[in-house]
Structures are given as C-alpha cells and as structure tokens.
Length: 325
Image (cartoon, rainbow, N blue to C red; front, side, top):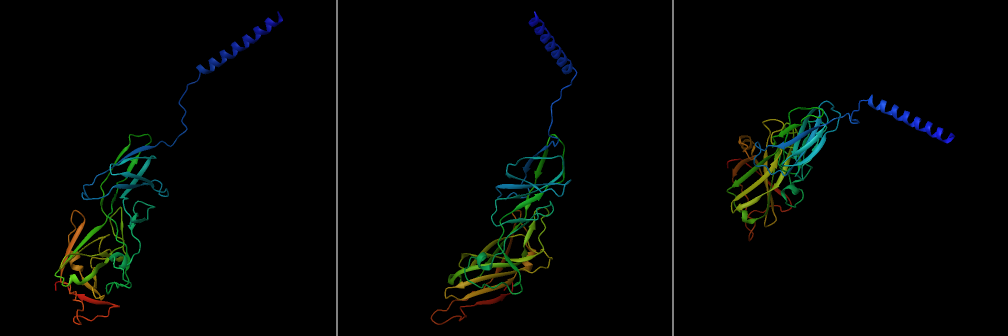
C-alpha cells in the first residue's frame, strides 16, 4: 500500500509538470531566429559593346567600390562576356570594368574608382623593334623618354552610382566599355633598296605612358614605343602599334617616327621623321585605329664591288627627313 501511494505521488508530479509546460508554451509567440543582420542584395552584371563593336575582349573584371566606406578595399569579380551576378551589402556603390585577356597590361591605383590606371613595364628599342642589335639610338630630342612595352588592346569604363537595399529585388548593372588604347597604323611608300635590308624596325615618341580606366584620360608622362616593321612590297613599309594615346601633356606634343634599317653589308641606318602634324590631323576610326602615310625613305644601296656608301658599320648612321619629300 505504501508503494502504491508513492507511485500516485509520482504520477501527480509528472502531470503537474506537463500542465505547467503546456501553459508556458501557449503563452509564447514563436519567430524564426535570425543571426545575420547584414542582409545583402544582388547585382546583375551585363556588358553592352555598342561603343566598341570591334572589340576582342574575352572576359571582364569588375571592381565594386563602396561609396559609403571609402576605406574598404574594392570587391573584385571576374565574368565571361555574358556577365553574371555579384552579392553586395546595402549602400551606395560604383563599379569599374576592364577586359582581363591581356599579358602586357599592368594595373595600379585601384584603391578608388577614379584612379584605376593601365600601364606597361619598361622596355627597349631592341625588344620592341625585334632587332637584336645593341645600343639602338632613340630619336634626337626624345633621348630622355622612357621606352615602354606596347600595350595590349584594352577596353573599360565606370558605372554610375547605384544604391542597394537589404534583401531587395537586385540591381541591373549595364556596362558600356570604351577603347582605352589607340592603334596607330603607318604606311611608308617610295622606299628604295628594300631588297637589300636584313631587318627593319620602328619607334614613335611622345605617346602616353598609361591610361585611366574610368575616365579615359591619359597619364601625363610621355614615352617612346618601339615596334616591328613589315615590308609589304619592294618599295613599301607598313607598321601597326598600340598606344595609350598621344599628347598627354599638351596638344603641341611632338611625335617623332624613327625607322631602323640594317643592310646586307651590315651597315645600320636610322631615319627620323617628324609626324606630329600627321598624327594631330588623323581621325580615330570606330575600330580604334588612326592611319598616317609618309612618302620617301632614302635607304642606300649597300656596297657592291667597292661602289656605294661607305658607312661605319659599328655605329648607327642617323638621317633626319622632312615630311613630304
């Protein structure tokens, strides 16, 4: 009997505990737990190439800048040309894009959206012209300019400011990339004795050393670039070189075209042509090219049977040419 009383008391205690628990539960309102107070929003990125229809970009980089927190490092996303999405925190943003299928291009100044700058490393006349002869001279008057490596084709732009809200519907971000380089094409006609040359190269002075991705403005330093030259027939030379732009300092910047020729007898000649007016008058085409033409380049006939010019073979012989001769 004593054992039955103890069991009854245990049952009553359990029943009381269950009743209290049910009372507490019915008095509570349950909500989903949320441990993330930094709700984000989506950005849907696409690229519209109407301003650069002849581009050869294959993939793009986008740098997102938090306008409300300038000290924050840019957030980088890489996309195919079809675009993609990004996930960012609420606030005000701007974004900069450029193609990343490049080898020579280097980037600096990416701390803020106004300062990303494309540039290339230091080079030499020998490397750029692909003429492996030491001590190749630069154009007279441009000897102090640094020689840089030819840039790859690059396109880019900056977005307008846009605002994201927590758990919003997302933002459609469309970029319109533009040319951030120019292709200078040069044709030289009426060139005698090309058949006697073993190698021809060229350089151009007074061009920009860099280009800002957001604004398209050129860096203020002027440099020289060197490049190979092609013989397209017995009296014609053609060349093509990418530059970040011309006249970064002023519209009166001087541009000297230099052609280097190594003859069959081993003599070395270089011809300097002031093409400033021709470059300033050239119009950049929709495909980012500028074309100029020069006539006459007096390459001498090498020594044959004791006749002809007798240059000092170990040094480069310089000749200045007036445009239009």
